Structures are given as C-alpha cells and as structure tokens.
Length: 195
Image (cartoon, rainbow, N blue to C red):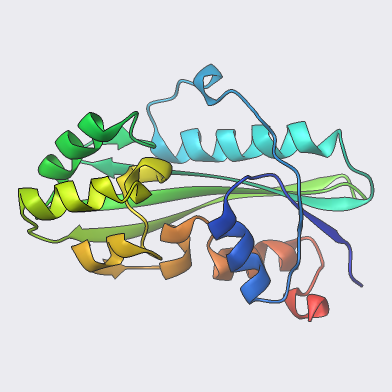
C-alpha cells in the first residue's frame, strides 16, 4: 500500500535524497521557530525539533505520512546548527579542522491514517580535514556552508574538506535512508512500494 508522503522541510538535499530512493514527496515547509526549543542533549534536541516540524505540517495535510527532520553538529561538546554568517562560519571551521564531530539528525515520521508515529536519531562521525585558512575562506565565499547544519555540505564542495565519515552517509546530508526504511517498516510500510 502506498500512502502520500509529505516532507516537512525546505531542504532541497532532503528532497533529493527521498527522490533518489523513489519517493517523490509533497514538500510542505513547517516554518517552526526552532528557538522555542532549548535542550542541551543533542539527541533530545533533534528528535524534538523533528517532531514539532512534522506536527505543524500534519495539521495542513490529510491521509499522509509526514516526515520532519532536524540536524546539528556537535564538536567538543558544543552544539552547532547553521552558522549565523561568514564570520561565525570562519571561526567554527578554524575550531573544527583536524577534529572529529558528530552529526545528529532527528527523524519524526507521523502516520495520519493509523495515528502513530516513530521518532529516531541517526548519528554519524565526521572527520574534518586539516585545511588551511585560505581553503576555509574560499569555501565560505561559495555560500554553501551558510545554509547547512554544522557549516558544511557533504554532498557539495564541503566533501573535499572532510577526510572521512563513520556511519550513515545520507544522515550527514540530512536524512538517513536506512533509518527511514526501518521507520517505515515499523509503521507497516515498505519503502519499495514507492517504486
């Protein structure tokens, strides 16, 4: 059985990930004010934000599965979302280079028909390269890091500045496809039904 799939996110990267596995979602941006949620535990933070985003969109659709997501990066115990501007991005990259961060992505999948939901968090380790100030400045000048949690895009130019990752690749882009497959299964759906 196929059910309408709604992505509660403006992220083109998340939309592309879903499309890459055969899901062509309806995109409905939540416009949820993330500043309302102040939690210090990264898992609780991303799961709560993902859930709130999905809940906001849930009221706008019918008979659908609604997926909300939220990502943050944690380096040396400090939580990072999107940089507020080029200066913050530069300072952050100067701290991150040569270090290991953890990228947390919260996923909340709500099934309107069954009135059930599944909320999970994917965690991937990111090994940042020992990059120069000039490389960091050139990257920031592209504008790419300003739109991404953690200040880098693994699916873009930022991939050249990352030495390696441990864990789910798509989780770093904003949506863990293996995790989504298992969440759908928990609700009684098969990912392949969208093919």
